[in-house]
Length: 364
Image (tube, rainbow, N blue to C red; front, side):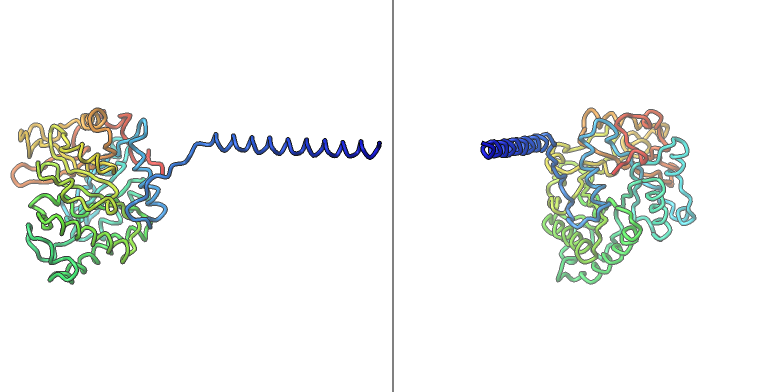
């Protein structure tokens, strides 16, 4: 009898232990089911992006899903007077911050206009490292000796100007490598406004333009191993009806952000619906009103644009736009300074707009 009782007791222990294990497994199953699934954000065109740049791109890709702080306020730095920049005379970025307490989320620089980049690059590096500004660079690829409207074949492998073009790519790569060495990610906008006949790389041979873009992308990422670049494709918005957003588009594997350079009082983005089909974050890669130059040439309106209107235009009409880059002011022979910057226009209501993100709001 004692043996029977012991056997029954042992059997009961086994049943209880088995039941507990099943309950634990069931609880674990519920806990796993309760965890939200994590959907990876699409990676960059360059799959070898360094972790810092990858995090920045993912942050940008997710901006349009945010309830607020979703438009990156950007300002191109004033480099039209090269001598002043050599002397470190910043006329826009720091003065704007002193007036508002806000640094732009993006600070841009046109390297076509910089004759001595080693003075300007530390300025941009410091804005990133000391004030959290994202740095954008456009241009910087010198014309190796072709005319606007050519088919660009001379620059491609086997072309008559290939050696010169490779040397020009090397020179620009060295400037970008400075930022990689110093831990600065770059929004890189090559061949900007490629649909405008004022650019040396303008062509109607779309296949060759796409090949040239892919050639530059592969040279910088594979040969030069520049893994700090987020690639921006941006035609000029004011050249209407040329199919720029699709005709010149090099393909999703070579682009991270799409944009448009818009200079218009009405702030209209032509073919916005087409831009959306490219399934990339959208930026106003350059913006300026017509006051004083284009559209309304009344000099009394120069410097009177209310940038809150642009924020509201994006909020109500172009909600997929995740940022802008206002152009800088410049001096003209006949009209004096033309004011395009936020600093020299009306920014009073912009600074605290719920959709605007400044450098201090960046978190990636």
